[in-house]
Amino acid sequence: MAKVTLKNIQKVYDKDVVAVQDFNLEIADKEFIVLVGPSGCGKSTTLRMVAGLEEISAGELYIGDKLMNDIPPKDRDIAMVFQNYALYPHMTVYENMAFALKLRKEKKEVIDQKVREAAEILDITQYLDRKPKALSGGQRQRVAIGRAIVRDPQVFLMDEPLSNLDAKLRNQMRAEIIKLRQRINTTFIYVTHDQTEAMTLGDRIVIMKDGYIQQIGTPQEVFNHPANIFVAGFIGSPQMNFFEARLEKEAEGYYVALSTARVHLPEDKQQALRAKDAQPQTITLGIRPEHVMLCADDAAAHISATVDVSEMMGSSVHLHVNANGKDVVVIIPTLDLQGMPQQDFTYGAKVNFTFGGNVIHMFNPETGENLI
Image (tube, rainbow, N blue to C red):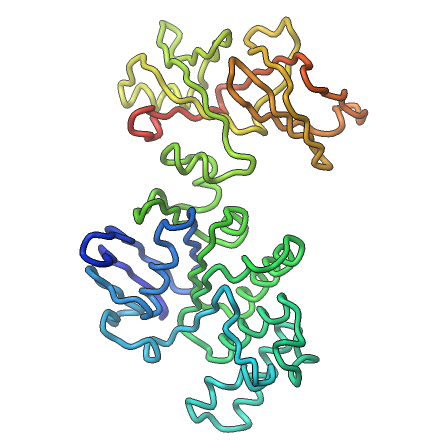
């Protein structure tokens, strides 16, 4: 069993600098967990505490049923892949991958079998006799991953392993990690600041800010039901649009008033608001760019805006429009429903947009918490 449990973990530097605070997480055996958040949020520090590279200031860390707080890194049965590869430049790829097994005094034939199996999984067999300097960034990262695989660890730790690669290679390596996970079937803890990596790789995502966990959930859960404004703005690209609006109530139920638009809420949101006895109030309204719709002047509920920037993204156009002095991003398909190209949106063009009550998110502007 490679279940990992973190109970009330805290990391404090120099008595008053708190890097990680009250971190609680239970990672199931063979689960792929992604820690994600902006720089300085404590995600790498948390990973390094699991690895034993950082001392735990308070709390308990278990791998399986064994308390690991005072166990040295070499005895934790974990393997770590770093951002900067950390390969030995004077050794060949084969020697780099075999090094940890040689330290364990494994038999030569066992070492050879494990190295060649890992090299085949990662498609680097042809590079086994090369030195790291003769490899590309992506090939070096495969070697670093291979060096970890041969150890057959209980827990696989990865600290932003793709951040030094270019965009195309990063996409390719992301797919390789998904395939790798299916083949070696162990517990993964993966750290990244890239929310696209988090959404595509993780069984569950842990979103962090300023050392605290903001939300834990599947990619779908955190995308569809963000716990607060921070999560809503961090997950999703382009990020969610936010507006100051009013939640109002009348005989027919709750509705949202924004500028000239008045949008009735669907029954599931009505029930959730009634259950909390929500009162009319000022709210922060969140709408994802892909859920904003352009509409005609005579639409019942619309907001007028002016085009600032039109970004052609291939299959879609990202429109940055100005609505009442606020920048709003609208994503529209390149082709309309009839398969014809959409009109060109030049600077200063007048447009109208609207949105459905089923796709909006409502937050308390003071606490940032989701109302439902």
